[in-house]
Image (tube, rainbow, N blue to C red; front, side):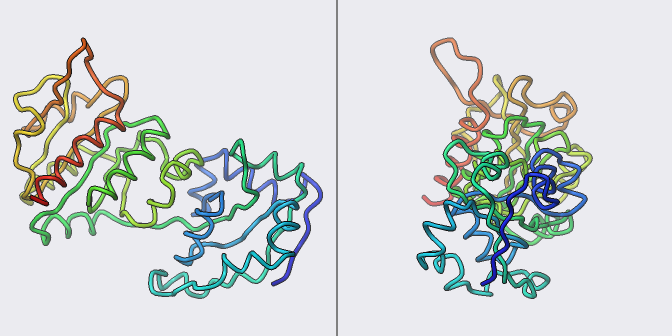
Length: 286
């Protein structure tokens, strides 16, 4: 393994990282994002998505010079690596002066390791094939979820509850936002997702393919646990402040609510989604 030491914050690689952290446009232009922390870098390596690795000088002194960093490069299987990524070969690590690394780190208690990582991808054709071919297709649609923590929670809950794919409206927060990436704890690699220009049009197409769609609303005809989710099902989760848009409410689909006491009108989007998703899993595992 070769090492290149970076001791200036004007280094072009540091400037690139800063732009990738701050700019959604930059991330999508390059098709990469920043994964930070031991677990995320390891997850990225295992799937062949890593282009470059950066570590703080402290990390280098404590874990690489002592030979412990082999953990990151041993037992990497090509089984889960996309074909187009199998040529990636990490033969160099960039060691960044602690003071500079702290400036580019997005975490309070940084572990001192990050990577520039290729974005996993999916497309609408895969969604429609799923809806057509899988008898119990389980899909989540997010209608303008804005909080990075909520999106991360929903992705992790979706993976845990057996969701097959997530659809996101174009105004949903960027899944490759550094805060979302951390909150997912690697789940973005294991759960297919897409952003769509018109969520309404996509839902109509899915309904035509036999998918039962359920809007989650503060008031609805059905309590969430009185609905059969064992067939093809899609759960719509709305924006934290405004809920599901009028455009999606106008669709001729079912609506469900989570009953609450104590004068509460709504729950945190991540909490509400988790309640819904694990009810679907419960019914399917009975």
